[in-house]
Image (cartoon, rainbow, N blue to C red; front, side, top):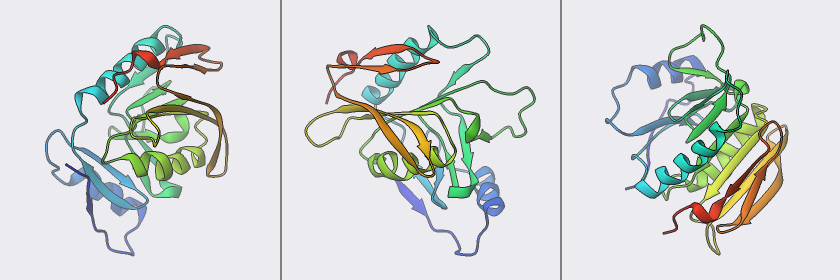
Length: 194
């Protein structure tokens, strides 16, 4: 099953998009995001996808401060890119009394993790990379199960405008190191392959 996009009126502004996203009744179990101003509805991820996210999450818990959390369904807003994105994992210290129940500003995130699905691969590689960099999120870990030549993991950092620098890129089976404040080595050999 692939993602479905919901057409928007060309003059619709950010507040209207967010209101539409919040108030519409979407199919249960689906992932609904605003990507470059277009509401995108994707099916729930496959089991292998979730296993990879869970293994990364488990490793991260051992290194994050007590006042940080790792969230699987937290929406992060990037209004300048017309984006309301739901990464597979968001690592952030949530502020007390967050302004909205439905989302937080993306700039609060310290790390986002995306595990590609067939329906999301282009967004994860291109649109979301630019949005996360624009928001100034220090690190973006892209686990690309559908990369040409076999599955890879790429760590992006040092955001500048809408571009990241590639800090490290490995094939499944190798390790990838997340720098401070994480100082964590992740063994991609533990990830299931299709």
